[in-house]
Image: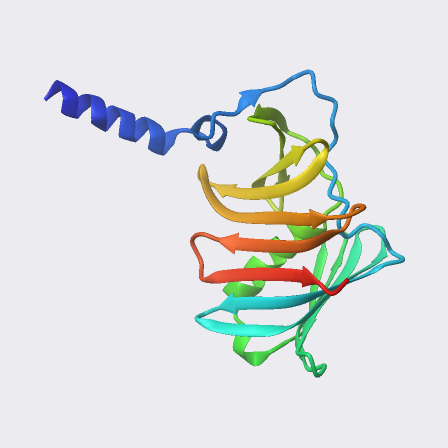
Amino acid sequence: MRSLLSSLCLFLWVGCASYPAKNGFEPRTESSQELRNPYFSNPEKDYVYKAKIDAFNKSFGGIFIVKKLGPDHHRIAFTTEIGNTIFDFTFKENDFVVNRILKELDKKVLINILKRDFKALIQEQSQVKNRFSVNSHTVLQSDILSKKHYFYYKGGQLNRIARVDRNQKKVEFFFSNIDDQFAKEIEIAHYNFKLHITLKSFK
């Protein structure tokens, strides 16, 4: 009985523990590193990827384009390889506009999730709320659209973002094959929703 109670207490503690506690984060107060995401920050560059998006048990392939139009102003479009628009969004400061979206994807829940995903993907700077270290990473916590995000840096380079809700990891962004502040490969993996996005640069 005592063993059973101990196991139950441990289970409840793990279930209620914060994301940093669950992942063995060590708090840091001395770090002066600022939260910065440089991967879509150059207004002179067109960011073009070959993309695959799996949503609602359907797969969509095509071209994913991000263009920075000004400070806190980006346009994101996903088209088929022959140029038909699947979706087209504008982010400007705190505004979000759906310019166009394929009827099959025109669902409020999906649009809201894509809004959160792409806002985290393109937001260049954000206020740091907490600083941690784990293994060889510095982890900075910030809020984006009222959700906790943890930015993982190794050697000063951002390689992962985790979005957390109720102490559970909901979404992860992985950046790889990085060259001069350009992530040639990006993966967005959802763990509580049937949505998965992979981006691979043409260059």
